[in-house]
Length: 296
Image (cartoon, rainbow, N blue to C red):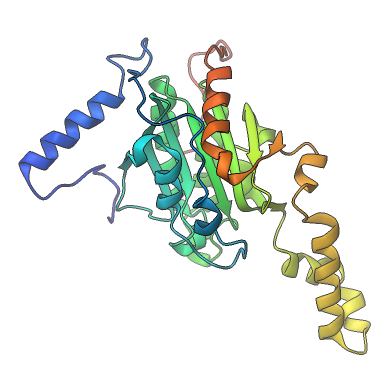
């Protein structure tokens, strides 16, 4: 919970051994093999209507990302890594149509899902592990940005955030990202955005990709108009509404090529499975060098 040194903790030996067996069933024997695939019992085209109720359209309302993951993966089963540490991000191993995938997802229930130093390190380590063992990576985004504050700045949030950026850029496994609601600022970029090499990027109709929220952006862009208005609050509300309608509507990202498609949330499982099948033969070579130069 404090240091993130231990990945798993259990109350008794029997449970621990059972979970070790489950973990091994998700990993290949070595880095030259693919993860073991099992015959799926969950239908590929299973619709998930409950997702429409799980994720509120209002970006300020929290929800449990774990329930979203449960609804999408095979039989609702997944193994979360570092469950008790940096809870504002979820890293988990699961299966989609019997194929093992690594899932990285913001958790809006904790710190609104922001990225901070610990979350960045946790996710970067997990992405590297998935890449080392040929496990495709699926990223669920609902991130309002990096956590502000003197402690984060003095702790080197930019340096630690760059570790996650480096991990994604260095990964050669299939990479798919899905934007559920908001994706703001630099945190959106480092969470496997299309601009850093995601193979496929999807979004739900509630997506908002921007530098910041409409309220903050309007206050900066239209500062002069708001200050000079007879009724500043009314002008601010008008500018926020105008900014949202022009730059933050659901299909803005698709029009600008930031996402490949805007999908129906109820069909998320099928879209991800079809995409993984398409990327199954992906091959990427890293530059010839002794080793990379990752941020420390």
